[in-house]
Amino acid sequence: MMDIIREMIRADVGFEDITTEALIERGTEVVADIVSREEGVVAGVEVAEMMAREFSISIIRWKDDGDPLSGGERVLTLEGDAMDILMVERTMLNLMMKMSGIATLTRSMLQRARAVNEGIRIAATRKTTPGLQWFEKQAVRIGGGDTHRFRLDDCAMIKDNHIAIVGSIEDAVRRVRDHVSFTKKVEVEVESPDDAVRAAEAGADIILLDNMSPDTIRNTLEELEGRGLRDDVILEASGGIKPDNIEQYASTGVEVISMGFITASARPIDLSLEIRELK
Image 1 (cartoon, one colour):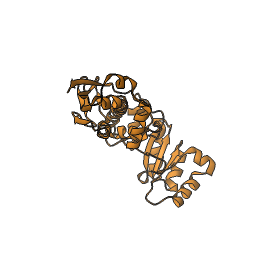
Image 2 (spheres, rainbow, N blue to C red; image 1 turned 45 degrees about the vertical axis):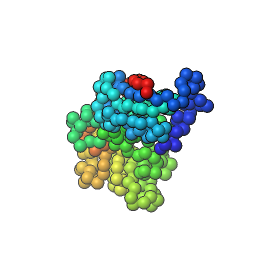
Image 3 (cartoon, rainbow, N blue to C red; image 1 turned 135 degrees about the vertical axis):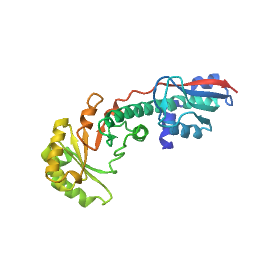
Image 4 (cartoon, rainbow, N blue to C red; image 1 turned 120 degrees about the horizontal axis):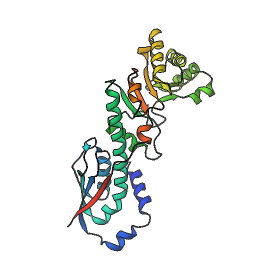
């Protein structure tokens, strides 16, 4: 993980921080606070701590990952060489702001869903920013959500394009079962109640109900129950689920709602770094 963080800082700095190099002498010690300008859920504290250690910057935590934020609250205090603090400032803040925005939105969506379905999980899809997958998924976890797949090797997910090439759900499930270890779950994406039944009968562990309306999902559950298949699978709803309809989807009885919305549409939480003391 530090290799990714180092590359982020190198890309931001370039050959040198020409402004800081011109104005500040190496060895100038300062104390700086990272402060929240708005309410939210903080995430990225552990990432900031990793970054600080890399540059011998001392850090005091006022907030831990997952804690609520109010405007004007201190999140962290940094102490060290001013050149190092100013060099990492933007990268540190950008990651924390983005992660805090995702954690805040995830928690909000989870609270909405659990108001009507106490045991439901809110999961992230793989609609993440390339290179930032780990950070965005961790932010979902910090917000109370489920990370779902980090990578393609985490779980076998048979999607519509796989089925279009292979020819059938049954053949796709069989071939995947023959290929992967027994330790891997097999998930199948379907778009109709009939295909959900076929996936369950073929031995899928998880069925993703893609772009179905809440009423169609309820019909699918009834069909699976009528055939004695409901208890054999985990049902996941996905596609077009947002704040204005999440309660409707959660009330259908599915175990999981997965959303690209919580990573792709989260607004960053406004954080700033303020030099408080020159030592």
